Image (tube, rainbow, N blue to C red; front, side):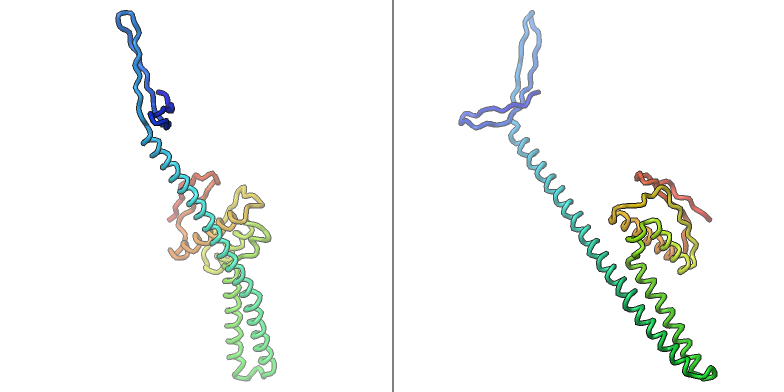
Length: 221
């Protein structure tokens, strides 16, 4: 079968398919040719190709928009984290110093000492919560020391905060990763830890060798 261009009576070209065949009869060879006008089919194929290109372009635009939204979200997280760490914690530190200053002016037997100490403990606890929230919003350690160190720190913090033992065993993780990939892995790990906490603890272990194939999970208990 051959694809050719035909010529109409009015001089316009059109696509066609030519099928050739032959047979023998009485020692002679006969040939046949069948011509099909494929104008409609070609128009449909071209329209489909255009739609595929438009769909691919739309998908690229959606991916780019998604990346922009994630970037904007992370910028906002980074800003909030910095404000909590630098501004709010500093203010709480000043409050704690003021409380301690008042305590130092009162006799140890003064009934207000107990109230002030309780207030100071509450401020200290609030400061820890703010520091933890700031770290969860955006860990500067991820930018400074890389993914593995950031995950180790986050998992250690989670274990201490939630009293849930978690083991992290990184293998062959590159020291330097593209920021978007490192951030994605970090956020996915955060969500896994949250799910483990919400479900009352982790009962399975799952890993990846980085090739896209996921080993079967191992269950305990």
